[in-house]
Length: 430
Figure 1 (cartoon, rainbow, N blue to C red):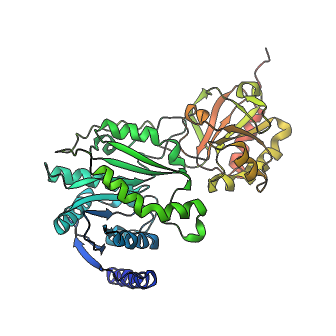
Figure 2: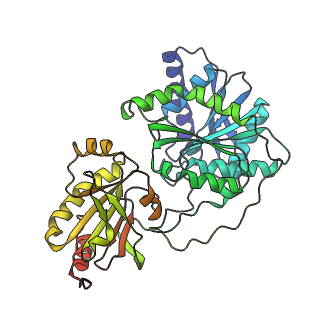
Figure 3: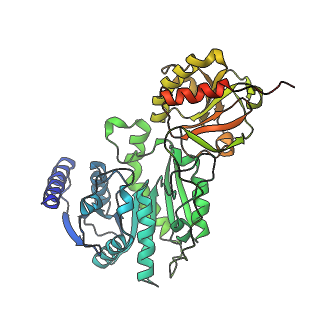
């Protein structure tokens, strides 16, 4: 019954979109039986061009903008299949939802699209949905050796970590990243945490034999292609309007590349040394910090070594990061509470220039020192993968606590941790 209503809603939405956009289009919802026993509703936007897209959802599911984009592509002669996997698995949208998408089911979808269309197929997804794309494409390769109908993979700001990055450690990617040898093109908005680490991901993909290319979208936010119009800026809307033509261009470029005849070998995963924790957590060992010397907004140089004898909260952030902005008021209150007891907060802005940061600070009240890491050197040296990331450093200059993601600096337990560090004996001054 739930599947019936889901398909009815999709169909009614499509009718409204088709009428409002003026398309006299061939759009239908078909059901595909999966090896897992589930039945997935797939919306097919039929067209007679040379290439076909199979679009898989991210962890946040299919959105109305997916349908609008599929209609635009259809008008340009590109056929698109939108697979509603969340409905098939009765899985609510959420950060971990893509983990339930089974690789054999994705392989079946690829097989169905290829069998129905007899044309070159490209598989597309974004964020965590890239996991399903890579696993499913490899499963299809294993079942169809020698078949070169799968033309490549297009991934919007993919997230392919094996687990939440652990504070201060190199992130580990899913084993399938290094077992992907199909052509991969990444569409990467610059206003995104993943943009700062995409070169490392591209290198990991290349190790499996993938020919990796990228389109960087300057000044565009991640999710620009699916968010509601009132949630995106001018640059995002401009990039969205250009997206159908961009995807046609990308598929054309991928079509010129040589394709593998069999899947790459799947290597054993690198053991994960520890489990990442959410919120402020004890650092794995009381480790001396990496060096850090950055200028503030007035051009004054701040070296972390000059803060010995004080407790330092080093916070990596960006103005476009909502959790960073949400965290700042509690950081202000923490600074005010303990300033006379030698707590210093250094907010390291990642990848933005002074003009951008000053414009942000004219609207948001920040009562601690802001440092500029425009070339992202400190971000890399400190093995930061997401913003905000925080390091709580004791008077000896050792990292004692930290968080990957925001922490609640008003939490009594967190306040007690800071108070204990402030109560420790400072090192002798030489």
